[in-house]
Image 1 (cartoon, one colour):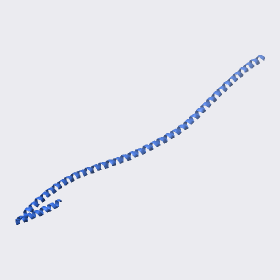
Image 2 (cartoon, rainbow, N blue to C red):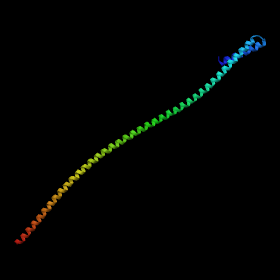
Image 3 (cartoon, rainbow, N blue to C red):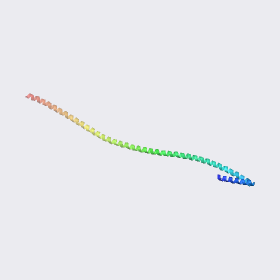
Image 4 (tube, one colour):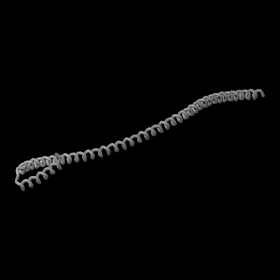
Length: 165
């Protein structure tokens, strides 16, 4: 029985008892018994209401705690999303930096190849010039010997020509 029905029944029975007591009939005893039963039902309904109110308060507390946990989880999800976005951005920046470093390395390797080729050419040229210098030195020494021999022959001819005169 609902609380409203118990209250209405108790009020109705109280009204009957009051009317029966005024009349002094047997129905007064029955009305008092009904009143006691209605009061008992009212007490049970009141206890049930108190229990439901307590359960409602516990459910309300649990709902508030669940709402708070949901807000905390939502904040954690938001933070994780921001962290993931930041990590993604850092990953893209790192990839771009790595690509730029590779491009610089490739450019440096190309420049190194050009410089090594130029150095190899200069070394070859230096070797050729060294060989030319050695050949020129040999020619010069040969010419010096020829000049020395010619001077020697000239002296001999000059001495012989003096002796003939």
